[in-house]
Amino acid sequence: MAHSPSITEAVGRQTVSNKVAFIGGTVISSHLAAPIEDAVVLVKNGKIEAVGPATMDVAGDYQIVDVTGQYLAPGYIDAHMHFFQSGSAFTRPDSFDYSKIQPYESDRTWVREHMADTYLRYLVSGVTGVVDMCGPSLNYQVRAEARREAFTPTVAIAGACISSFSAPILDLGDGDPVFQYTNSTDDAVAFVKAQLQKGPDLIKIIWSPDQGETPQQLFDLFKDAIQLARREGIPVAVHATELANAKMAIRAGADILVHGVMTEAIDDEFVALIKQHQTIYMPTLVVHEKTVEIAGNDLKFSNHEHGLAHPDILESFKLADVMPEKAGAMVQIMHKYMPYVDAEEAEVAALSEQEQFIVGQLRGFFSSKLTQIQRDNLLRLYREGITLALGTDAGNPGVLHGGSLYTEMTEWHKAGLPLSAILKASTLNGAKVMGHEASLGSIEVGKWADLIVLEKDPLKDLDNLSSVAAVIKGGRYRTVNQLKAQLETKR
Image (tube, rainbow, N blue to C red; front, side, top):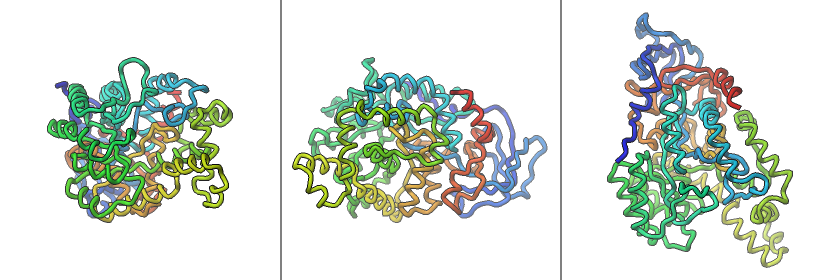
């Protein structure tokens, strides 16, 4: 089996022998009972050597970085994203087909040519770690590249999605698929075996009844593959968004549920199962929000998102807007009938029978009721003490690399979760998804010094979570202004 470099090897190569003392800031970390004010954090060779009060001795050979009046927190982790997708209007023709404006192949080329820019946009957003939740072999190249560079996010990856349906429109005809379609247990197992040879950090399963499969049929299809990966020590993330399928995925051994249950309220049985199996729950509320907006031809970016977006991504949606006649047939249908999805029944009744059917289909994906269901499910699981991780599904249309993290945090806050829970989900629990909670995700002795400096207290106000002033990666310190200056050279 191929050797996958450990987090120690990967981060170790990014650091040099150094000793740095970060002094005067308030340390906020999920493992602490309370913040440490006027603290000292000593870092040696990229790792945290000591954390304590200002009275702690600092030897004269430490470089001093004064962060007085600021807040030191673990670097954020986006535990669900995709490098092979740009976030543009052209990046998922299977969902929104604008290929008559720009061919899909051009988007994939853009992604490869702008990878350094993508790394920087994550860092500017305070994201020091990401999990690519499946994609082509580009993922392995990205991980290797990130481990060679001195100042990039830590990258964990899955290989191609192992799926109960195919998506040939996303393939480039090069034998390097994004989705590995399987309709047999043996094929699913064979795909896992092949991926294990490449040394992934996770295996990703798309557990979806697109061909009319029952939950039991999907259980029979994937259980052996899931168990094989787990025996090899590789966690399995499963996309199963309907309640019955999510339950069966947990029973089959899913370590992580991505996207969460989207279509109906979770019940007591689900809560009992997820507790019993200690499955991590990771919704992606922002991707649903952006998908609804694009379907309704009403995409909106916040000021925060807009400020962190690559100009090419913003321009892609402008091009799509000014050439609606070149959109795919399904996109045009969505644009026409989305106004009826949450309309009064009397208004829908005035449509033809065929049109009412279309509206009914769209409601199953885009109704505002689904947004509330997802929020309610997330809040209940928080109250039940379930491990929650924060991911954005960045790279999908309108879901920006780096800039979408704060939007996802905002959605969690709307669901009713406290800031402390959001911070934990985006740091320590993200490290659990990566499989690196022993090395990342909190400000503890022995862990890598992957930290962020915030201007304002992240436990006091939602906006403060985005007040990133500097990023510390393996003990190396860069201000956000320095990182933004680098961005200007990458365009």
